[in-house]
Image (cartoon, rainbow, N blue to C red; front, side, top):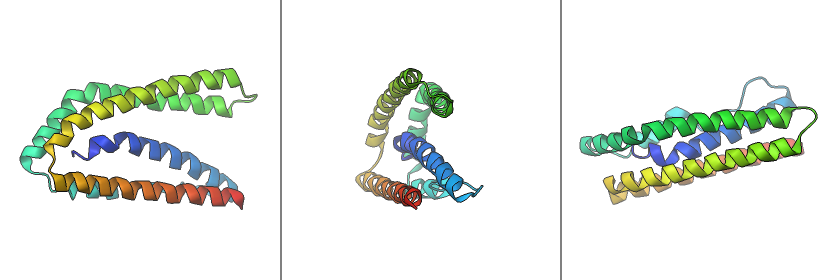
Length: 160
């Protein structure tokens, strides 16, 4: 549970990046099934492997509940604004000014989300033990490696 908060943004970014990249590969290869990004069950399995005590789970849940309104609002806003940007990018003819304006709006939301995640992390990290913090760093490194691998697959597929 405690691992969940620091990776919410990364997970959303991963889903957006890999989802869009998967779409590009599938269009090139005429496939209709999207490539699977990081399987959610794998991520949740990694989180559950932290061995949180009931006290830690309760404390982390309290932090998350306290921040739920901002987490929910920011997450919904990010998705909505990303969709607006996607639609502008696909619109014919492309309107550079509109795309730049929407990208700036999305950038402001990404900044807000990053600040929220940093604030939440500052409340959750003290709840964790050193071994649990190390495990989180390992999980994040594994997720980064998987994302890098997916990105390379996309680039190679585009190259042909």
